[in-house]
Length: 383
Image 1: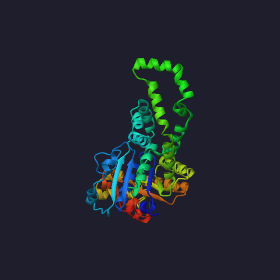
Image 2 (image 1 turned 135 degrees about the vertical axis):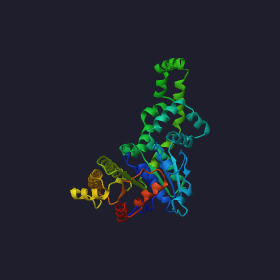
Image 3 (image 1 turned 135 degrees about the horizontal axis):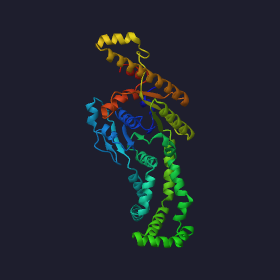
Image 4 (image 1 turned 90 degrees about the vertical axis):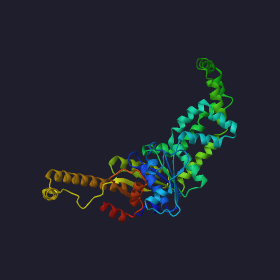
């Protein structure tokens, strides 16, 4: 199995998906940094609320607009980028939805009416809470602008895979739903609903709160009605981008049982949806070493003589045996993962001694991500 560079050859979009706590955000950043170091202009998008990505890339903060990582950081690590660039952003779902409204509004007046509307602010917060769709919207927007060779998207935890993969369809269903259509019609049932008992209720609410709720609801839905076609077309094109042969889904997981199950589940969903599967990255793997297996009394005695402390020697041997058990477990789980997914593209990254908090840490991960399988085994054995 070759490394990530080969896996992403000819690809314009890399979507990293996986459960929480497996290093998915860090892996996304590492992939982006590695491809930038190979001469590509790359942007990494994350919706992870943690600030780890910004810290890793030496940025004070990330927002809804891409920011370039200082090229001097690569130089400080002795990395020659050959003209490559690394950009990063942290998605603001609400801001993305506002931008979407601005794009589809027929004129500035309609745009402002919607964005200033109290009902829109409530609905947009609810829909923008579906970060999966807004992430894909921003991904689609940047892809359409064609300013980058590669876009790397960090996604929500994979138990939200159904939400992520179904997000465009769910938005379309919301727009096309009968309940929404009722309110967008200027006449008919929608006006009847507003015209009888509810008018008295809204009148009472207006006196109590000073808010003309009926007017806000009516204004929002009538303004939104002229934008339905644009949203439907956009959702269709987002789906097309996900299924494009130049897009690659990379599943990120840990070697424990539950993350393995998550990875298998997500892979199954990709296959069912006919979406392009690139490969699997298994993080924090305990590689088996030449010292695996029970150590025995002889080893304890020999080590105790070397360090001059019997208790320390016993604890060291116990730690080594625990590590061996973890390594055996990881090997079995990865073998099962490979068999379940019928995947040859499984890249293993070892459990590192320290958390990744800077570009140097990302480049350390890249030693494994961009290596061939034999090279990874040599690297792991030398740790």
